[in-house]
Amino acid sequence: MKRIALLALTALALLTAACGGGGGPGYCSDVDELEQSVKDLGDVDVIAGGTKAVTDALQKVESNARVAVDAARDDFPDETGALSDSIADVKSSVRQLTDDPTGQEAARAATDVSAVVTAADDFVEATRSECD
Image 1 (cartoon, rainbow, N blue to C red):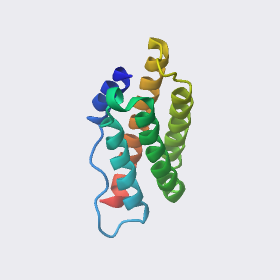
Image 2: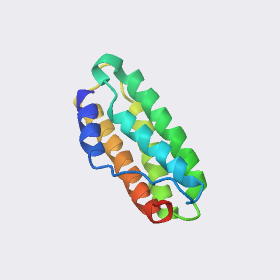
Image 3: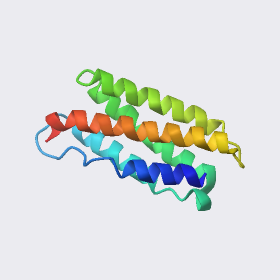
C-alpha cells in the first residue's frame, strides 16, 4: 500500500495548476475541485489510514470527476471519457485489495491510481484554454 501512496505522490507532482477563476465556463470550478481531490488523494497516509483512507479519497475523486465530466463532456469528450474510464478501473482494482494485499494487487492499484492522475491532468490541461 505504501507503493500506492508513493506512486500517487510522484504522479501528482506532474499535475499542473487548475483553471483560474474569472468569467470562464461553469465547469471551471468543477475542474478546480477535481484537481484538489486528486491532490488530496496523493496526501493519503496509507500506512496510518489503510485501504479505507485510500477508498475514501478515491470516492471524493470519483464524485468530483462525475460532476466535472458531466459539465464538460460536450466540450471535451475524449478527456472526459478517459477520466471516466480510469476511475472505473481504479475502483475495480481497489475493491479487489485485501487488508494485506499482494505485491501484484498493490502494483495494479498503483498503476490505476497513476492513470487517474494522468487522465485528470490531461482534462485540466484541455480545459485550461477555456478557463484561463
